[in-house]
Amino acid sequence: MTIPIADPGASYRRFAEEIDEAVLSVLKRGWYILGSECEKFERAFADYCGVAYAVGVANGTDAVELALRALGVVHGDKVVTVANTAVATVAAIERIGACPVFVDVDPFSQTLSPEALQNYLRTNSAGVKAVVAVHLFGSLCDMPSILEVAERYGVRVVEDCAQAHGAEVSGRRAGCWGAVGAFSFYPTKNLGAFGDGGAVVTHDPALAERVRMLRQYGWRQRYVSDIVGLNSRLDEIQAAILTVKLKALDEDNMRRRTIAERYRAKLQALPVVLPGDPPGGKHVYHQYVVQCGGRRDELGRYLRQHEIGTAVLYPIPIHQQPAYAERFAGVSLPVTEKLARTILCLPIYPELTDEAVDGVAEAINRFYAK
Ligand SMILES: *Cc1c(COP(=O)(O)O)cnc(C)c1O
Image (cartoon, rainbow, N blue to C red):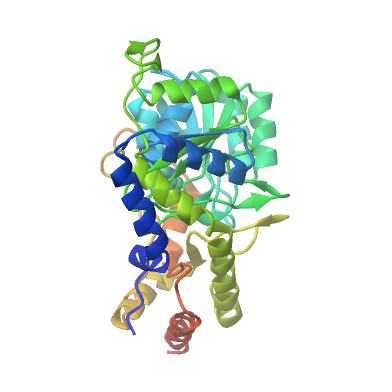
């Protein structure tokens, strides 16, 4: 039995009939970009997240960029974030000409440490316009603490929700905590299109309006650019697909949680640190990430030999990536750097069978029994 680390095709097969119909109806209607399907999805997704507005954009990287631009982040501003994230988070900051500043993470949640943020801002808040809090692997950052610190220093908070569709704490979902939330619908995300897609969500009508303008050349009225914008639009086919799949998102997230419980039951006796819910909240397990100490690479190889896919998200923190290392040579993030050496992602997606989960768990048990 081969078990891949992700299987977006399985998600298509599960909804094939409804998706084929939705796509065909868009093709026949003859309106392909920013139309009624996009509006329908934006309404449904805003309701799902518990915010007033959602604005469809071309991908998650653009969503982060447009969120920051809408908040007024410009060339030369500093934006605080973490180094254990998709390089997209940092690429979005730099495309504005803003300067990313990295702070360390909490060793268990692996997300932005409010203490590290406080320590940075206490002495360096000048020039810091925003914080991008990344809800890594499907679990929310400690948003109450992060918001409190940010407010103290007059810094706005963007949530990078690309891995956390539907994740919640105290019944409040990803995207409704900060000033703005940025989502990706890359095919393997918890809510995935069959192409690129993204969304920016917010409670604030003025910010929503600004993102709407930014995503299409700064237009409020067609062919009249009131501000300098760009092109970042959600197409009608992806929007129609997302509307179909959004209806199953809660059920899909529940299945991911059931798989996580199954892994926990079968791995808890091993010398590994397993992920779990944040206090008062629900993890949606975009990734199931175990901390497995010094034998990480050996375990990954062993599983690969048994046709089980694994991944490391992320093997190199951003400040040590070849493209960034020179500029961030002075940066030291001990927790982030240690996690990069010890974490391993196991297969998790709604279509993964119990049998496959057991197969992965048994292989890991065999490895540690060796
Ligand atoms: C996937 C991802 C993005 C980027 O999304 P794209 O749609 O690929 O541009 C940004 N941030 C995080 C944390 C991600 O996982």
